[in-house]
Each structure stands twice: as C-alpha cells, then as structure tokens.
Image (cartoon, rainbow, N blue to C red):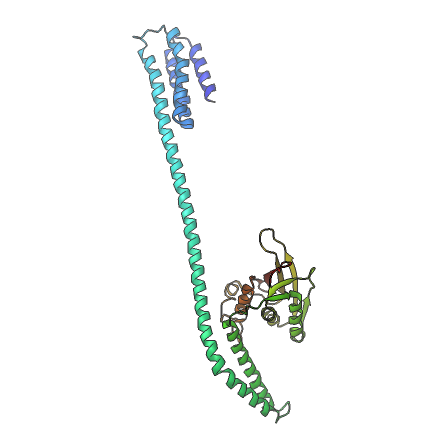
Length: 364
C-alpha cells in the first residue's frame, strides 16, 4: 500500500506541467502521508526508510525538471530534509509509544496474575478457616461424646430395662402399654443420638482389608428391606459389571452406605424408588476409582441446604442430629474417597461415593 501511494504521487508529480505550481505544491505535501503511515506502522526504521525512498524519488524531479537552481528552489531541497525529519521523529515517537504500550500490557498481565494468586490464596485461607472451624467442632464433639457416654448411656439402659419390665404387665391396646412403648422408643432414639456423637468423635480404624463393595451394599439392602417396604419404596440394587474390591473397613463402609440409604428412605414419605449402582472409572494418570450411585425419587434438597448438609449438627429433620452425612463424609474421605450430592427439589437426590479401587496385587 505504501509503495503504491508513493508511485502514484510520483507519477502525478512528474506528469503535471511545471507551470501548475499549486498542483506541484500539493503533490510534494502528499508525500508526508506514506511517510507518517510507515512511521506509525513500523516505527523508527519504517519512517526513515520510507522518507529515504521518497527523497530518492523526489530528487530527480528537482534536478531535472526544475533545473537544479539552488537559489530559486532551495525550499524544495529543504522539503527533502523535512521528509527525513518527519519520518525520523514520527517513527521515534511511534516506537516509544509502542514500547510503552508493551510495558503497560506486561504490567497489566502481571497485575492480573497477582490478582489470580491473591484470589487463590484467599480461597485457600477460607478453606483453611473452614477446616479449623470444623476441627474445633470435632474437638468439642469429642469432649461432649465422652461426657454423654458416661452420664447418659448408663441411665438410659436402666430406664429402658425398667420400662420393658413394666410393659410386660400390660397388654397391647392398654393406654399404659402404649405410653410405656413410647418411652422405650424415645429411649432408643436418645441412645442413637449418643451413638452418633461417639461415631463422629471416634477416629477411624486403621485395620483395612479387602472389601467387596457389592457385598456391603447387599448387607445394607437386607437391613433396610423391611423399612423400604413399609414406606412403599422400591429398592433396586443393580449388580456391577465386574467385581469391585476396595481397601477399607467393612463395618465403616456399611455404616456410611446405611446412612445414605436411610436418608433417601426418609425423603420418600409417600413412596418412590431408590436405585443403587456401582461402576468403575478408569483413569490414565490417577488411580482407578469405583463410583457408587444412590439415586432416589424423593423430595430433593434446596440449594441453600445443599451447601450445609455436611456440616455437623445441621439437619432439616425435626428429630435428626445432623451428624449422619458428616459421619459418612468422614468415613469416605478416611478411605481416600470423596462424597458428592446432587439434588433437584421435587425430582430427587443422587449421592455419589467414589472410592479408590484395590489394584491387582496391591498391598493391604
């Protein structure tokens, strides 16, 4: 484009009759356009190179067409000097502006990276603070559990034993029989609360063995079978495509699975379905995982509650302790896995448990 503009201006300049001075003045001023553009686009070198080309093209016009009279045409020779001055100055300014823009861009990128690092550090601090609060709760919970175990469980056992003896003196249907039966059930509920506190505070066992996930799930399905039928819930345990074996504590895994299943059953007061399936997730870089899905058609969990369900003591049930999912999460993470809950209000909830597979020949 620059070359075309210089050639065009030069042709117009050379082909214009000499007596048309005003046109020659216009053409020699037009040479500044490609010089300035070259300086802006290519910096100092571009401006100087273009002004030199214009000077070479313009010089024969002065020497041959105007006769080379230094006295009469001094301004035309000065024009050549101005071409080079304009090209050099404009190119220098353009180059400095470009370098400054590059520095500003580099500074902006540095600030953006610093902002991202600060944001990551802020998120880490929030996570650490959350973990510290959780640890503080667990520490308090441990102290409370010790007190509860000593001060409540023994009297509860005595109360229940006495109530069962008194209940034997009455027949079902008698008002006193019903009242004593309520007392026994409430005693059992209070005992379960104490058990939940103890489970939450108790450290995970270190004795890990080979565990077949499907066998543990079958045991859980057998335990809750009657409860599911009473609630009119269809419990479906799908067989896995391959035998899934993990390294873990069978009792704790059953407890975790049982907590999830009980929560699902309680969310389907009007009946529904609960499907449990196990699949294997192969990974190239990380260890292979198994994924256990608990999909129910219950009431679902709202977004606000979904962010709090793993917090100790948080519950939406009138008679809940808020420790079931917190205990479950602790067990799953203690086995090197992770727990995730997905839910839509009115459409049901899916709980995902991911556990690392026991590799063939792996150490126990």
